[in-house]
Image 1 (cartoon, rainbow, N blue to C red):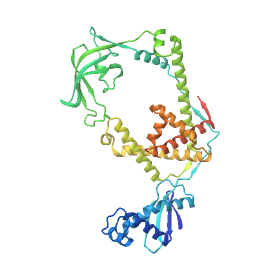
Image 2 (cartoon, rainbow, N blue to C red):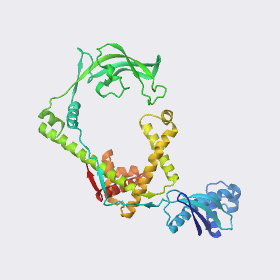
Image 3 (cartoon, one colour):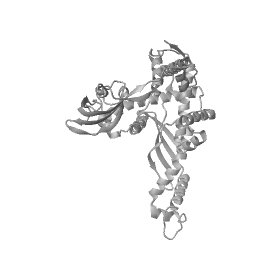
Length: 430
């Protein structure tokens, strides 16, 4: 096999490949024999018809396509290995000349990984704003524990209050027309933690049991149903039941009930310890991010648009999947945001992700950071614990989608490089 290499823009190389005629004929004969096994030819058992009869029944071009499909992976593998190419996409056949008895000539294009020039990535000093535990964080954590153990008591002798839970009927209208799926009977709503339209829960405060009343609100401009976005609406409501939360007393008995604590002081110490660990985790995450961003600032790399386009396609697919998980459709997103707006934003994210990935891979190569069997085992254990699965079952499930293992491998490399950079640079927490 002879090759001629020509460098082209956008990190692409054009490769002219010439395969000796005897090899080209061998590819063709093997393809004809293979195809004959799947074609019914009168007078012959499958796989036993001579080449000329197979050609008459299915045509030379189909045989040539099969021959190329079978031979090209090995041909390209040899070209890539011989020239030490670092390809980032499947080779593309631009043209070929396949005449039986003559050398097979193929013109293909290979897209290569961009050359990454690292700046300084060790012994840097990075200033990071330290995370401050909010002043009310401790009290909020304590109050949350008390609320989780609260009991609900029905009240009948007063109006609704801002911290009540109400059971009510409602029916919504826009311009006098009933809103589709905009009604319910005996709906339970926690007024202090409402996800309804802004201003809705507030208007349920100060109402009497059995009272009929109207609530006037305006749907947000970015509301997912475009026909309702920005529209004023009226909801006819009636309170059926009022419940109030009764919190338990904060004492040693309560502490013993919610965890392995003997006293309230033990419980409070545990809450403070949790908040301190949370601060450490946030500071570590922010520091790792700041160090990585500082390293990326000093990197020089010319990324071809095709890489960004492919990454954008992946982000679009992820975005659509996320929408479906949230109960929305791609069509609703297009209606609300527009295709150009969505893709433009995702394309920016894609460019960042591609560059970050290239930088990580380059540093991993420079520092000989690799994935070991132990790394895989640890990652499988983490995933198994998160999903409540033993490693054996997890491996069995993951083996059905081999690409997951590649993603896991890349994630491990990302984590190890991030940790390496954090440990080899200085962070000043302010």
